[in-house]
Image (cartoon, rainbow, N blue to C red; front, top):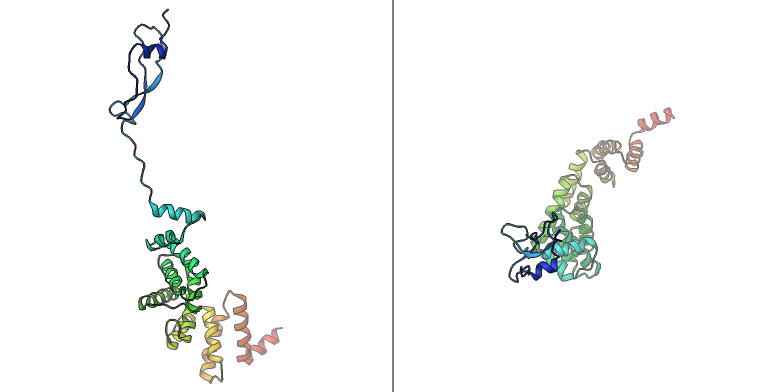
Length: 264
C-alpha cells in the first residue's frame, strides 16, 4: 500500500500553500494525493480564503468610545484625571457630574463651591437622586450661584421634589425661603409648603406647623389649628414624632389628660 504523502512531501511537489500577502488567510485542508489510497483527510494548513468563507474579509476592530472608557474607569474606581471627568460630565453623564462635584467640593474652596453646586444640580436633573443632599449642603454652605439660570434650576428642582413628597427637599426649601439665601426671601412660600404637606398627611410637616402656631403667645384660633395638626402628627409611624404630638396634645386638652390618667 502506498503511504500517504507527508506535508513536506506535498509541499515539495510544488503545490503552493503560502498565504497571500494581500488577503486574509483561512485554514484550508490539503487535498488527498491521487497516488494515495488513504481514507484519512489531508491536514489543515494556512491558505487563501475562498469566496464567502468566514474570515475571507479582514475583521476591523470596533472603535472604542472614549467616553465609555472613562466611565468604566470611574465605575471601577480607577484613576481618572480632572480633565477626563470634566469632559465626561459635560457630555451629560450623571455619574461623572456627581463625582466631579464631589471632587470640587472636597477642595474646600469657597470660590468653586458654586461650580460644585452646578454639577450636583445637573446630576440631580439627570436622575441621580443621591445628589440631593450634597446639593443642599453646598447651597447652605455658602455656594454662590453665579447666574440666574443656576438659581432658577436649583429652585425648580427642589420645588419639583417637594411637590412629589420629598421631605428633604421641602425642609430645605422652607429653611432657604425663611433665611433668604440662596434662593431669596419668601416666608409666605415657606408657610404654604408646610401647610400643603401637613394637610396632605405629612406627620413631620404637621408637627413643625403645630410648633410654629404654638410659638410665642398663640390665640385661641391658632391653638385650635395646632391641635388639628398635632392629631395628624399623632398618627405618625415615627415614634418620636408620634410621642411629641401626643404629649403636646395632652397639655392642650385637659380632658384628654384626665381620661388618660383615669385609664392608668
